[in-house]
Amino acid sequence: MAEFIADIFLCPLEATRIRLVSNPQYANGLFGAASKMAAEEGIIGGFYSGFVPILFKQIPYTMVKFAVQGRAMEAMYGATNSEPETSSSSWNMTLSLASGVLAGVASAIISHPADTLLSKINKSGAGGDGPMMTRLGRIVAETGVVKLCTQGLGPRCVMIGTLTAGQFAIFDTVMGSLGASKFHFHDPAKPHH
Image (cartoon, rainbow, N blue to C red):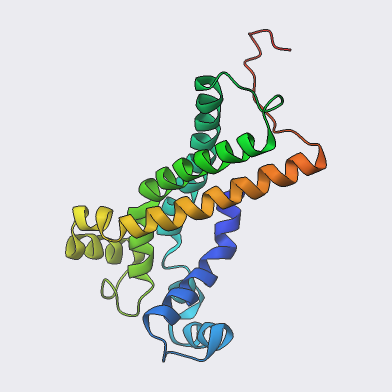
């Protein structure tokens, strides 16, 4: 739910950013581009034509990022017979970075088709005229499913894997420096300490 709400605010910024990247002469700066898009296409057409793709990008991305990182971290500690509480800070950081890379790559793969659609639909004239879903359908037909899923995936995996590793390294460092620990869900039917 939090990601859905965040996407309502993210979508106009992402639409404006993509428009400026795809056409640098469109306007001078973020506010100039946003004003021009609103005047030319309206609020919904200009800023929210990519709302469905952004939901299909961000929600799976966020879910996979945290699920994979948590599982990878548990598996790595289990495989090395170690625990965060008794391991050195350098070992914990190594596992944070490694699990972050895995989580980032998995997130990049799962969200890549929607990211490609989002980039394409926010370019002026993409998919022709008509409702958002019609335009998205045309973009998929023009691009092809395989290309939609694979074009630019390698660089995206490198970028997102690196960024996610950094995010979890920072998160774990801050948590450790504050003396806080991660919240772990437990099956209420099973005893835990």
